[in-house]
Amino acid sequence: MKSQINRWRNLKGALFHIPAVSIALILTAVASLSLTAYVAKDFVKVARTAAIVTTETPRGDLIRVVKQPATAAEVSDLVQLLKQNHPSLDISQSAIPGGLSVSASSVAQYREWVTALGTIQGAARAGSIWMATAICVNSCGTGAMRAEVQGIVQKVSKGG
Image (tube, rainbow, N blue to C red):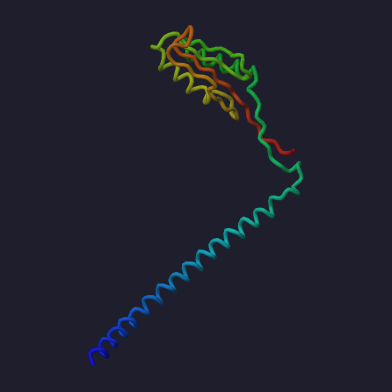
């Protein structure tokens, strides 16, 4: 009799866990289906983009960014403007195409030197990008600080 009661309890326990397992399996299936739908949507999006951008596009329709060094006139104008705003610094055109040099003779001019470097991009012509190619602080040959800055003018063009 006791063995029949124990069997009944074991069977009863197993039956009560079956709905929990079923629910877990159904939730797993729904999650897998939703993930599959998401991946399929992404795959279709990539396929559409690949169909739009093909190698058969004529070269004349492509957009290119043309980068050239800043002209000597642009650099000269910028040097004059910086000399007016920072007269204690030595600012001149450098040998680098589209480049200028900003140097200070003493460490006490550090704040003004950094301010001059920070104003180059804002004072320059629109469409140009100014990058420091060399920076030296403390013990820079004849001066205390020196920076070489180069300007690049970007233009967007259509065509190959």
